[in-house]
Image 1: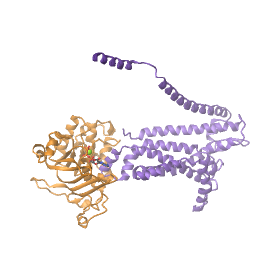
Image 2: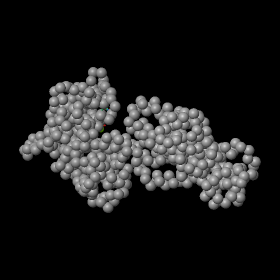
Image 3: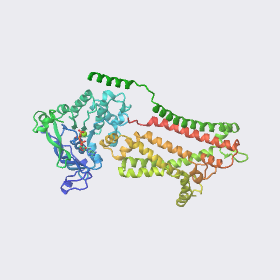
Image 4: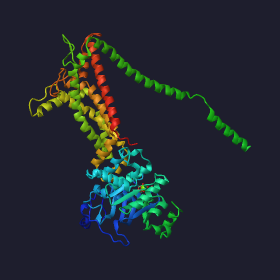
Amino acid sequence: MARKVEGTTMTEENQAQVTPMQQIEPQHHADKAPRESLVTVDDVTVKYSGSTAVEGVTFDIATNEITALIGASGCGKSTLLRCINRMNDLIPGAEVTGTINYKGVDLYGEKIDPVQVRKLIGMVFQKPNPFPKSIYDNVAFGPRVLGIKEDLDEIVEKSLRRASLWDEVKNRLNSSALGMSGGQQQRLCIARAIATSPDVILMDEPCSALDPISTGRIEDLMEELKTRYTIVIVTHNMQQAARVSDKTAFFTVNVNEDDKRFGQLVEFDDTEKIFTNPSDQRTEDYVTGKVG
Amino acid sequence: MEATEMRTTEDLQMKQLMVVRPRYGELLIQALLGLCAIVSIVTTVGIVLALVEPSIEFFSEVSLKEFFTGVNWAPLFNPPSFGVIPLITGTLVTTFWALAVCLPFGLGAATYLSEYASPRTRSILKPVLEVLAGIPTVVYGFFALTFVTPLLQDIWLVGEGPGVFNALSAGLVMGVMILPTIASLSEDAMSAVPGGLREGALALGSNKAQVSTRVVIPAALSGIVAGFVLGVSRAVGETMIVLVAAGSTPNLSLNPLEAMQTMTGFIASAGLGDQPTGSIGFKTIFAVGAALFAITFVMNMFSIRLVRKYREVYE
Ligand SMILES: Nc1ncnc2c1ncn2[C@@H]1O[C@H](COP(=O)(O)OP(=O)(O)OP(=O)(O)O)[C@@H](O)[C@H]1O
Ligand SMILES: [Mg+2]
């Protein structure tokens, strides 16, 4: 099963599963719970230059839900999140083993193009990183990369509306994105991610650089977005995880025999259960603020 | 007892705060640094002034109109002719071919080093580039004359090939000469673009080429253009290569296969000859120098404007 990020070693069994991204059919999901999973993370281990960052993680991400990843610093939340859209490929020495399936397709399969993966699974970063271009060009960036030339105005407006930013910026679409406040910049980054119409949006501590009011706006926005998109969010803010997410994955840092630290998934369940009645003592200690 | 001790330390701290002994060391450093700044400004101004006086004298004998519109350059002949246009075209033609080499290759090399090369490859290539930048230009001149020109003559397919002295080989080699400088400066500017911008673009499904051309290069534009301006200034001011490889025949032509003289080429060859101080030949050197300075100056101002208009400020 083990293989490098580049997909050099593959078992036959895996090759049979590989489907070109274009052939993925949108799946109709039943209205009744439990929702079916869009992404399945199965026994995923990530190593950086041979040393394990996070080990043996298994959980499912359900369609149109918000999944929160919580845990102390260094337990591998960002690392895991970046595996889901293959951003870890860009880090020399990063090695992913295990399986991540998206709509039943192995994202680390041999024929999968990471660039295409990132078009379907977008990402919002901890520090707002708008391009030093106009607001319009920021949102139009993704569609243009996809080769879309028509209806750009429409796409830009729709994305900005969905990111509840349109009314604030509609009169200055051509001014630089860097003239916006941090909270606006972060919502612009969300609009930019939406503009390529992804299925999944990964957010790595999207509010950690923002004030409480901007944070509140982004939380409201996530509630709206989850009707169309599936969201995975990393957060250090317990209240935020409790407020916005449907499912929560709690990670912790373990120390192995050689005194090496690595992250592990302790518990994955409905957010309500994690915060009111967790099965593991470590989860309870963490969410109640006794440690970490 | 304890209370008084406390008081005294507090007093001591207050005193330390208030001591206003002049800091001689710091004043001295400030003065020295100021002196350095003044020296560099004064020398520049001095050079410009030294250019101005003989130039004014020159233009009292030769009209501005004759100088800037004349198409025949023969200042040391009898009767003399002072049309500087052939020297300007010579300079422009060689610079053009230099740019034709260093613009694509410089930008390409910088993009490769900054966006594609592994840290190891970069750590080897970058110092190599910087060493190349230190090769004396006379070496490049003979490289052009004894290697590039014969090569061009050999591989030339249509019509008559380049002559022994020609602007093309001088220009191409000049492009190679300024390539390391431009590549290195552009690479610095591109590497300085925050990684977060690259990640942002990649997360939107861009490939590396799109990240480079749509995010990194626009964000690094001011640094890149600064590198090119420096490169072009060096090309316009370059003397040795053109003197050796392009010949010293003033020639009003855009055909790079012919021999040409550039402004710097004239200054060097006339300066080597015996021009008595105060003679018209002597003054001509300064007039051409002043014109060269003016051209470079205008070009720099122009590119600064251009950069201000188009650059993307990332912080
Ligand atoms: N690019 C990298 N190269 C090498 N090691 C890395 C890299 N990124 C992360 N790590 C290591 O992987 C482990 C997990 O890091 P990660 O950033 O995923 O943690 P995190 O849970 O997101 O922490 P935080 O809450 O502080 O963001 C850490 O031990 C870290 O040092
Ligand atoms: Mg993190």
